[in-house]
Amino acid sequence: MLKIENLHVKINENEILKGINLDIKPGEVHALMGTNGAGKSTLVKTLSAHYDCVVTEGKITYKNKDLLDLDVSDRANEGIFMSFQSPIEVPGVNNSYFLKTAINEKRAYNGEDEIDAMEFLKVVKEETNKFNIDRKLLQRDLNDGFSGGEKKRNELIQLLMLQPDLILLDEIDSGLDVDAIKTVANVINSMLDGKRSILMITHYDRLLELIKPDFVHILNDGKIAKTGDYSLALELDEKGYEAIGIKDESK
Amino acid sequence: MKVNEIKGLNLPNKKDEEFLKINLDPLFSYDFKKHQTYEFDIMGLETIEDKNTYGSLLFDITKSFDNTQKVITINKNIAEPIFLIHKIKENETFYTNSLKIQVAKNIKAQVVEVFVSNSQNSAYSVNRSFDLEENSSLEYVKIQDINESNSFIFNSNIEQKDNSTLDFTNFEYGNGFSLNNFINDINSKNITYNLNGLVKLTANTICSNLIRTVHNAESSTSNINYKHSLKDSSKAVFKAKSIVNQSALFTKAFQNSDTILLSDDATIFAQPHLEILIDELEASHGASTGSLNKEQLLYLQSRGINKDLAYDMLLKAFEEKIAHNIKDEIIKEFIETYERSKYV
Picture 1 (tube, rainbow over the protein chains, first blue to last red):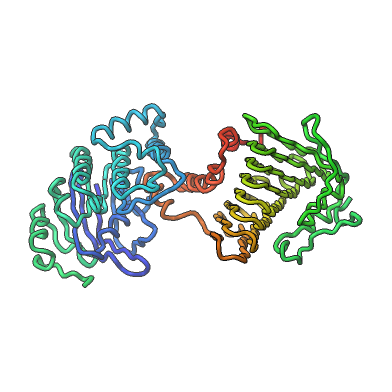
Picture 2 (cartoon, rainbow over the protein chains, first blue to last red; picture 1 turned 90 degrees about the vertical axis):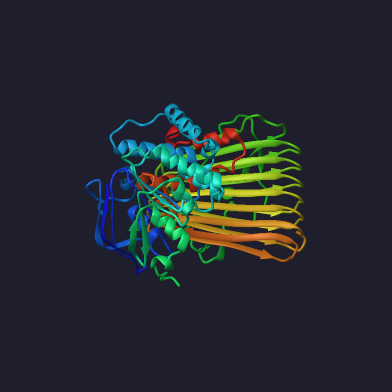
């Protein structure tokens, strides 16, 4: 589904990613771990075409297309969803209107008919009921005045409604209590259908206990320094980065 | 007929501090074919002689043509707003019009005025006086939607008595040259004066707002809030001066101008200005200028919304903040569904 080859990325003229190679096949769950400043967020931001990230070298292939040729909205409509670490507040734009617009943009991109208001409400109700997520968030302006937990729940509603193929989760568990992390895990696990793939950034083993990754990658100084299975995350949790041979370049 | 050739009429000079950045010469030196007093489409309005001396020379333009003033007196609560629609159709004509809106004690009223034109090279000079008696409340909304090659001067003089509230909202949509002039000398206690404006310009449109507020009495509030959304080579001027004199203890005086420049050629000249002679007050002033928030734009795009649509959604959100301040639901709906094509 996604193949990253020798990816080099600069932010403000500083090289952050220094030759990333990663292959994510359909249905796989990949976890990305690493010390602060290792380049984890830069990688997912690059995949979603964030304006800060300048690709200087390398290639990204997604569904047999050159991902770097697609702009932000095209990447989303091709099925890439990035859950923001800090979802942006957009006062004045109604959350429900925003979500319906996003769904219809994706439908138009795929040559499908628009979703009508009744159908939209029906699907929202079904999806949010499954995971006990408060629909009142949709009546408010997009993330405006939302608590940290509400912002993350709103990302989950978008995820459920947009049904992407590649889900990028940038610390979706940060700042969430145990119950909220369980909700996140329930939503993600429900979407794992053997075709959909996930790349998730997390610092903690807690989320990985609930969403078992097929691969765990440790990123260090802009490169993948180590790759393993779930046991690597357990080892990291137990021993720390230095004990498994990762030098924290930020110290 | 040229405005600058009217005998005895003193006109503002662009060298005057107040009129810096506003070029009135093309309007004042234009040779109009005729003058006409614009008559209201309401029967039986009282007509009085306008004997007032106003704090701006601009009021004298209308008065020099016609020294009379129509009066609307609202002395009972009305369920629905009064709508006054002005349609300028004739070319090469200098129109004038003067109206006093009086709201009686303890009365709540709503008035909407729409100024539209489909004429060529015409101008409209309008004087408005607002007299609000004690405990009265007026929501006044103005839409200016003149077309290219037309000019519009709107002068408003406000007098509010104790505990009265004026919510004054302006929508500047037109494509010509417009100048709004707001004067409120606050000589009564506990009054509220909210002046809001959306200046939405395209092409080579020029719109200026001159706002002068003088606090002379205790415990009153003035809140001036403008948003500018400027495309192409349009130009806006926002000059707000609020003076808080020694007698105006516990005043609240706020001024704010936010501008989004949507092209490299669009221009804003924003000058919020406070003159404060006391310590016992709350006051603030500010002006921001920029483009749309790129993080918000990226967030919308990251969910599949194309750049142009995301841009429109954010711009609409910015502009709608002014309409959201409107209290009357009928007026709010009128603004939301307003289309110039319904009138010209």
